[in-house]
Image 1 (cartoon, rainbow, N blue to C red):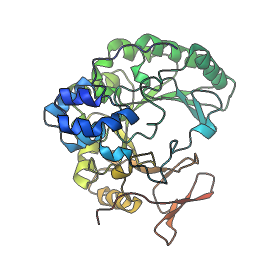
Image 2: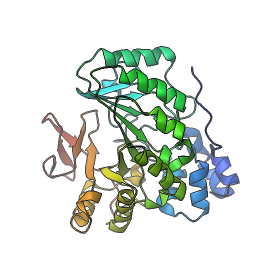
Image 3: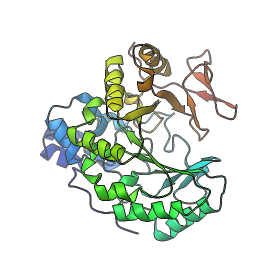
Image 4: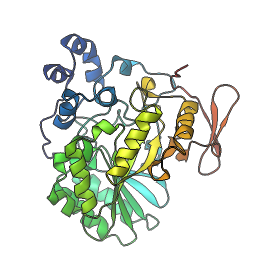
Amino acid sequence: MTALPRLSPTLRSVAALAEAGLISPETADALAPVGQRYAVAVTPEIAAALHAGAGDGVARQFLPDARELVTLPEELPDPIGDAPHSPVPGIVHRYADRLLLKLVSTCAVYCRFCFRREMVGPGKEMLSAEETEAALAYIADHPAIWEVILTGGDPLVLSARRLREIKARLDAIPHVGALRIHTRVPVVAPERITGELVDALGGRLPVHILIHANHADEFTPAARAAAARLVNAGIPLFGQSVLLRGVNDSVPALTDLFRTMVSLRIKPHYLHHGDLAPGTAHFRLPLAEGMALMRALRGPLSGLALPTYMLDIPGGYGKVPVTADYLTPDGQGGWWVTDPQGRRHAYRDTGESHN
């Protein structure tokens, strides 16, 4: 197994969080089982933001919570159904013209609401050389594939040298027309966005980067500078966020987040409804509350700053906008969701209501 490049010193245990003063020693004792069950990582950038006074909008995303050990019957180890669409390790091929290439299963930070929390973390590492070759061969052998999406884990934990190699291999596949990268790194470990890394993304294929951020306070001065380095190099940036209880579940919080993105030349792209990942019920809102928030934003918030509110249908049936075109109440407190192929699926809304 190939070793990953060493990241900046990061707090990787509940005990380390307590030693850094981010949680109390008493809290650390209670949270020890959470740290044993799910990966913990808080980078120096996020730790500094928390010490500098970033509120619950940041803390709740990265500091463990005892409620993570409560798994509802509806929650799934693979909530969006990656496994049925994975023909070879590292590939998720759900749509004909695009696929996910998951080179790594580690991240710079571990979000407490992560939908792949059962699949990422220390010890998962990255694809072997043989698996990487098989994944690239799969892409080369399927001419319908036009877009490759690097995700994981977080692909920008890879070294600039490795990214350059992967980019060159994809550039050489004639039918691939675009490369997309999903990452948290510019926000949580902005020191990694070096000139060398930006240069590694050059070449034939245009690169689009989707930066995951959920609260305006995540955009520290260093994170803003990292975003500027990417945009100034000609790489378009888009924002993707998750609607989270206690983080951004209000009109002011979402307005601040999306306006901050636009001010940094990041186009808000998707606002994801929380997936049915184990131990994440305390983060999810009911769909009706999410729709009400989006209605409240439309008009007062510029269309340039509005993302599309999306639901990933459990079971691997794809993403759909959370609108009346795709969702209808089932009359029993749940929903019927129509997938992109026109099939209907029952969805039980397990979000916690304010009411």
